[in-house]
Length: 528
Ligand SMILES: [Fe+2]
Ligand SMILES: [Fe+2]
Image (cartoon, rainbow, N blue to C red):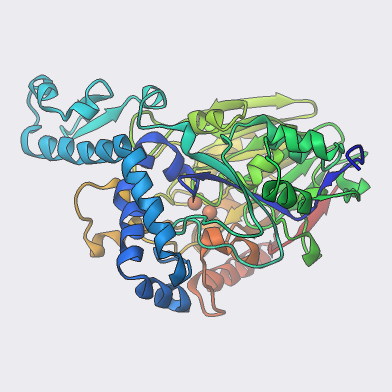
């Protein structure tokens, strides 16, 4: 029995956790992580412990979808209280750090009035000293510049909070990742492993290369008894990978849903914003088994939770060459370094700035500007990409907004001709406070927040991109419509939704121009 070759089942899911919450950017990176913990996750747990029935009612109300409520049974109050208390004890440094940021910004608001900042260092809360520089911009607005690499080596960042959870995807929707901790589940295997643990790679490499149970169990440091039983439920003797995961000539694009696109030639594979359904049984979509055995480049467009998706990245790490990420501005908490984040999680990362190029066998990748979609916050860690492979130019816009169509005219002369353009049209996104509220140290007026949204291109902006790039084909994507990503996106469209009306208008505009255009959903394959 123990020498039998075993493969990971095609529908295995993994979630990377910190303090049992899904480890997306705002949870994992040290400054935003501390503020997210103190100003969002801790109050949510507190509120659930005080009034669990309010949370249960909100979770059951479709109008509250995407709200910050704990999606757990009322009987789990003690577990959430224990988690809250454990965090208060073990993560006291992070909670104090978040409080110190508030204290420092109160100090700046009162005393940094355009004059010499050096006397203020002595007044900084001790938790911040040595971790921040005080700076003005050229309009004399003061701010804290954080030394993020040093904070990864501080008590604010603790690796022993990390864990992974393995389970089987049966098509049911996991709880919303921004609000609900992963509590113990009788069918889920939670292991206290760091997210860069090599056992994760050994497990997922068995999609194509089988190992014995003992080898897999040892790699994941699984104990006997219940953990052993749960691990066995994740393994099978039947490999599921189809031969057409590779191609032997030309070029191919496979759309995996949402913003996830695979570009392939026989010699290179490039996967953009990996977010892949593990519900293999659904049968209507590409899943992990449809990926090639090697992914040379992963391109990340920005740090939102639907574009850096650890539940997918961890499954792929064993076969990924380089993760290409946009460089951040450095030091602003709303703009953490994607490179540092993904290096901690065990990837080889290459940072790019606008118009940096990477050549590969038979083509090149160009980082291109990404305007907007971040509520007008000064965030530089965002990039669209232009890829040339197998003779075609492909623009991958993700959530970039066509705020300034002139940019694309200039890009066309500077970079080259675009055959295919992928454009995100989630053009009525959530307000500023939905994703960023925990980073502010004073209240954001509601009327301000709703003018600053996480919005991609509307019809006019998308049309401007197509016109100025001279794209021959256009594909609308990244709308968050697929059912398997609702635990991350929490979108709720109706046929009358502004976004869908804008898509229809854009498709019409393209038709009038003789540009082939489609609204992608779930799955698509393009071959040339
Ligand atoms: Fe986004
Ligand atoms: Fe998005």
